[in-house]
Amino acid sequence: MKISRRAKWILGGLTFLVLGFIYIPLAVVVINSFNPSRTFSWPPTSLSTVWWSKVFANPDVTSSLFTSLKAGLGATVISVVLGSCIAFAVARYKFFAKNTISLLVVLPIALPGIVTGIALNSAFNTLLQPLGIGLGLATVIIGHATFCIVIVYNNLLARLRRIGGTLEEASSDLGASTFQTFAYVTFPMIRSALVAGGLLAFALSFDEIVVTTFTSGASVQTLPQWIFNNLFRPNQAPIVNVVATILLIAFMLPVWLSQRLSGGSAASSRL
Amino acid sequence: MRENRVSTWLYRHPKSRLAMLLSAPLTWLAVAYLGSLATMIFSAFWSVDSFTGNIVHQLTLTNFRILFSQSVYGVIAVRSLGIALFVTIVDALIAIPIAFFMAKVLSPKLRNFAVVIIILPLWASYLVKAYAWRTMFSDSGVLAWFFKPFHIATPGYGLFATAITLCYLWLPYMILPIYAGLERLPDSLLEASSDLGASAGKTFRRVIIPMIYPSIIAGSLFTFSLTLGDYIVVKIVGGKSQLMANVVYDNVGTAGNLPFAAAAALFPIIVILGYLTFVRRSGALENF
Image (cartoon, rainbow over all chains, first blue to last red; front, side):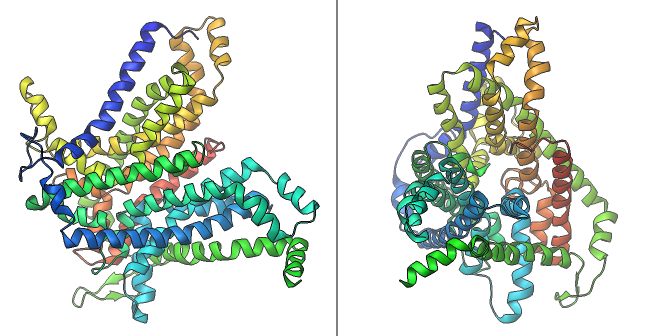
């Protein structure tokens, strides 16, 4: 099929328009964070960094930032351990119900967040509340880890399939023990995929709001929750703009890094 | 030499190795996830004592009776399905030409760059993206400013803003699978079609669309499922309108009726599982 010159131009123009559709709203948020006016109106009449200097003096912002970091770290550690276990099992062994297990791993992210959220919420309320354990950071970490497992799993599984098992077999044929093979052969080859998966799991947890809302209780507030709670308060709008811009930029970094570490396949592991 | 003995034992017992690998993650997923899902499904059959506000652990169909008898929930269910369908169709219509341009027109170097450009906003904060559209649709916002010289009034917050924002949020989920499908489609197939006399339009309809159909289905799974579970976008740009997920959210939060919320949450689950089995049966997911 010859694609005519005209068709190419039309398709290119469309792509360009859609890129505009994707990026203009994000650019508006960034520009708005430099808008000195308290009430929002477009276009801004002048630019200033006045709200940027105020944001870190806001105790709610800094404390929810730390909560988000703690939740993200906890969820990342758990999901890296559990996700790698499943990835190794699926990549290197044949067993009954393999398909069911890979479906089970994907399910927490395939079903909408509100389903995972309310399921965890009703389980915590029914089973933990009678034991005197309330909702808090720990329940948030459990929730996040559950849907982050799939990200680590996808990244590592792709890597394990690509490198195959022959090098590991060669290593044990040459007399290396199970542990030596893992330490000197397997681990160096999967390290970057693990880091990429971990970074993406952290990014996913850091951004999550739906499962968080249902598992956090009244005492814990993550950064996305802070944004959501202050979104509808007009006098908080300038600070919300700044925090939103920080989140936006903070995200490009881990994704870009993981993309480089994995040789370009990591970021699609969310699909 | 203790370590060596352990190592040899492990080497000789692959089943034990497998059991050790699987025990922790499967326990986690079974207890934390499947256990929770089961509790939720159970609690959909409980009720709340209207006097004390405590949950009554007795099986009843009250929640479902309310869901099916009050017309407001029927309206919300139809509206949720309608928006999910709208978002899926619009995203597919946008994604097919874009993905085609990326996979078949751009040079390989530019192609990778385009993929990164499409993927990056997928990872940008969900909440920030929804918030961005609040500033776009506000009365003194970007759209109002842009359309003012043409004397076009913007619709403001409401269902239309919700639908557009959802299309925006899930667009990369549609573009990437279709792009992957088109990349796997060999150029020689398209050439063969035109050598046999098919016009570009006919090749598109008779060769390209059937070949990327599984990718479109995979993408639609995301747009459909994510839309049905969303309550935040409606809260941010939807004005007073409600979707099914809002019923769930409001009953957990302000109303404090967890059993009713669980019953309402079964709606997206049933719709998505139904769609999933339909898709699996059509064989569209075999490559994913």
